[in-house]
Image (cartoon, rainbow, N blue to C red; front, side, top):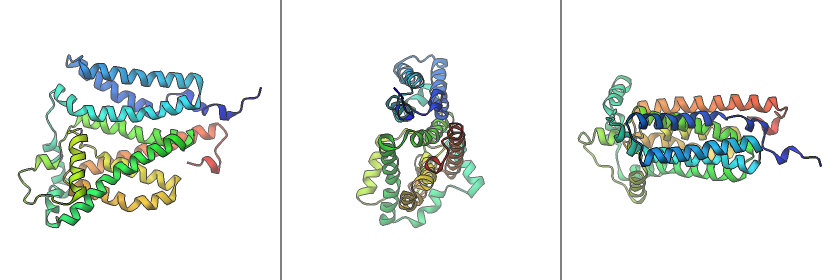
Length: 302
């Protein structure tokens, strides 16, 4: 019986993929630092379990090249990312680290002369705050819609390329949270603001979502900007209609991080830098893989 390529995942799934190095290193450095702090409680055990499942999925996907198994292997990164992100607010205190907001604010003073959220107060209004809140929320809509659509309907080639870039970025970004934890201007400059952020329905909804889902120390780098920019670049390459639909929300995603007092300017710069780095290194590596398989044509162009 002749078995066609459709029965198997692409042969580069025999290797450890780009983002799997970055996500594994993220988890390993957290585990090592927990061990150095003599902490072997809940978070240590959970990190071992989640990382162990990850490595099993990698091993099984490599051995079988089964398309479904490798799709699960790729999508497990969503679990990894959310788990690591939500754990940061409890892990930073275990390490006894102080927030680095003073340092981040001093960098902003050198770069732009002060904190931009303070300078933006003269533009505050309830309607504008509502628009910015909608913009900030649109990031989650774009991100999880893309995960769902690509996760279940995209080819393994496209999904692998997407995961290679975005989870390399998440691996770097969440590592940044563990090394330079910051709470954000809305905490650091709380007593310096002269105007309150008031809006309407979406302003309140956004505030509740941020309060419930924040990692508390998730400032440097800005993954709202980094991941948002990555999606923009990926849409431009793979779905030009979605790119144009997403372009305006992306502008408001960037502006809202400052307007709503969530990020320092340096967070945005570094987030954008790592976004471009992750996108292009993933693109270069997967172009090489596909060319090596003799399948690099217009259908697979990346």
